[in-house]
Length: 314
Picture 1 (cartoon, helix red, strand yellow):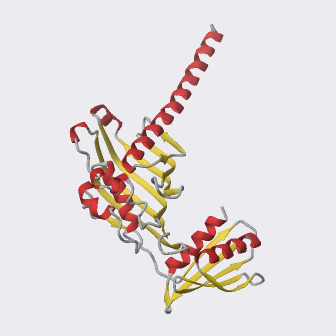
Picture 2: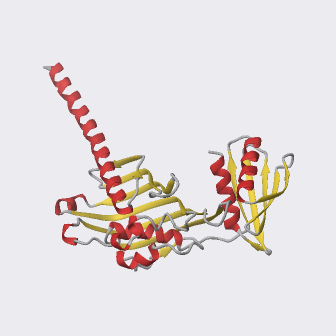
Picture 3: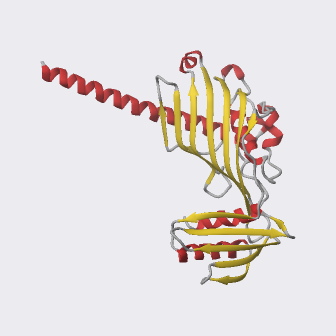
């Protein structure tokens, strides 16, 4: 009898474990499928966990990729999404969320050689995708509070000639919105919240935002972009590898005017600005990049160079 009870207990525990894992796998598939439909491109998630009793959802490694016609790569990188949902609302065919927290690490805007933007090619940026045609067949959707944390926005322009024009904006700010009533609103807010802090113009998302109901003012702003003429980062790679990557990035984006491996200094002209890369040795290799144009600081140019160095070190 004891052996039978032990076997039953083991089976019960194993079944609960399998159901728990299967639940998360199924929900992750549903989330990425729905998000892919809204955005009109491939969407992946590294992991997802739903707390049945708490209604909390944690999504890790959420990525939206470039639409067709653009280079392969990630458009939106969201390391962590936290959601608080009211599960009973699902029985009424409604997704009812009390809170959504999105950490957007990086948005990469690409302008093709033909002058088209990858964010404009997303389904959510099209007029026909801004609002569902038949609302009766659409599942209800509501978010009470939406917290958006934005890290970096990269602007990569391939239309200006043989060399790419790359700027990066270390935005680093938070916004809180309320009363979001569709997935299209949510996606539009993520894109608009990122682009409005940059000098990137011409995105269709601004024109169709009203159709998605994104006439929403932020409840609060935690921090804003602080202008300065330099950016800095530490790398775990060796000095020579970092110096070579910096040299390759400088050659790709501009014209090197002087280079000294012994001191770790590289000077270049890029987009009409004078820039300098300083690489220092230590426990970690540090890169500091500064850029000025007509004596005015150009931190977005410096950050663009740093972004390209980071890409070459991958």
